Image 1 (cartoon, helix red, strand yellow):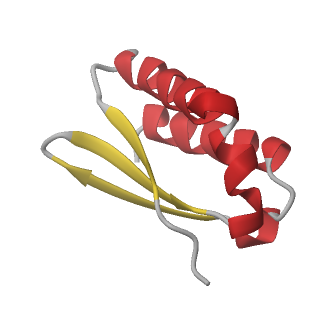
Image 2 (image 1 turned 90 degrees about the vertical axis):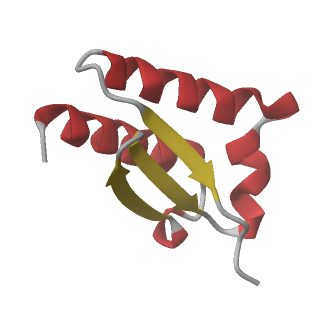
Length: 86
C-alpha cells in the first residue's frame, strides 16, 4: 500500500467517524484496478442522511477531497456508497 493509499483511507475513516453516529457499523472495502482505487462504503441506514447531507453536499465534498488526495500521486480515487443492509 502506498503512502497515498494510506492517507486516503485514514482520511475516509476519520471523516466518517466524526460525521456518523453508528461508527461500529461502518464497512469500507477497497479495490484497486486499472481505473484507480475504489472505496465501497456501507453504513447503518440511520446514518445515510448524515452521510449524504442536504442535497448530497456532504458526500460530494468527501468525494472531492478524496480525489484531491489521489491527484497528488496521479491516482484516481472514487467512493461508492452501497445500500444499507436491512
